[in-house]
Length: 330
Image 1 (spheres, rainbow, N blue to C red):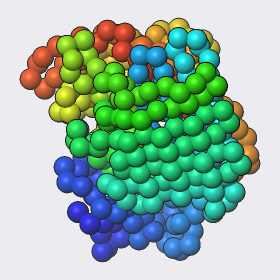
Image 2 (cartoon, one colour):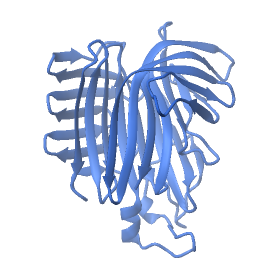
Image 3 (cartoon, one colour):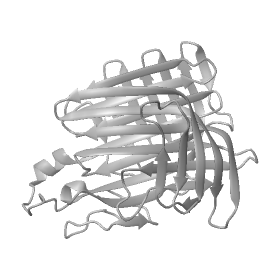
């Protein structure tokens, strides 16, 4: 499939088995709720894009992200050392229309950010980033698993296309004040989240994800969310040795006043029954007139069970990963 938006300016909702070459959001027939056509230059301003890559291992968890809201952008790069509890992070707000670039090709992504001490360059098969007291250079193997590609309604006339890929094999290293860390071990994996669309102007979600090795040596990828991208279809899935099992709606039970308490995560189809135990977190509160966000990303371990399409019960024991609680106005 060459283009997401067809010649009539419309998109097809649902899960895509075939690759989507270009997310040509500027060709979408975007209208106000009362039916007034929004001109092309405004469509470019209203589209939101972000690209995140997470790296997960027994000792270290890292995250690199680029967010492009056109009129505002930001980038971040962090490393959490699970053994020492140390967090090293660089995050920057970007200049409008210049600091961030996310090309509209989810199968061959290229995302970049540059502002001050932070520089990020993410491609399909490699990643390079540097910040204050932290740097990373990795190669990624995107062929070991089948991505989840999905397009859902967002609000009255909007939509969101997202592509989740997990797990990805990694080779390379990351460096912080403590020295250089080799990430080429079989115990280190990555996950990718590439998203573009006309999102709700006020939105919130919870998210949980991991990419790791099970005790029996098989690889595990996990992507679960609640509150976004679930209008008729969900972005919930897990992968075992690259084979995807689709999951129904997911409920997150947690205490927003004390996010460090365990989270219970269960799906309506009973394929997911997990507990997430937080170890540490990073948070951000921004109020920049057009943009407001309250964001907490937690690092910890999952335990519980997953059930495959064939009925196999997969035991998850102290598997490190992410959970997230996020409100956004954009």
